[in-house]
Length: 111
Image 1 (cartoon, one colour):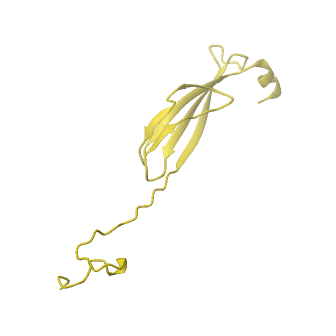
Image 2 (spheres, one colour):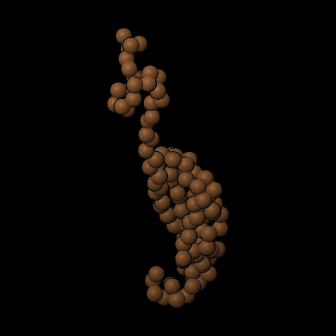
Image 3 (cartoon, one colour):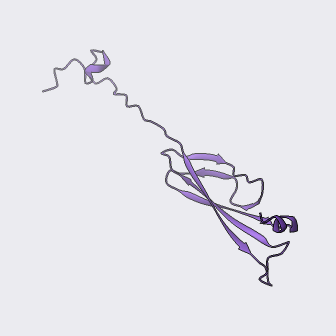
């Protein structure tokens, strides 16, 4: 019988019955990002300047809180869609699409 107990939470140091019980919740924001490329050789099927590398950048919310105002940048690509990400719920993912147009000097150097 707890009806005669001084407090419903003896650890809180009060003698008030039915005082609020405070539960601390731990926010743990985190995300994972992966990037996959696909080379488009154009109509002739031969690697040449002007061919395009298409990227799919997947952003996954691996935390337990909603993330907001996510901006993906890539200094070697042009982001074409999916950016910025206004809001991403826990467990959700979204794809950001980007591309890069190859130059002859990149082909010559192999990178």
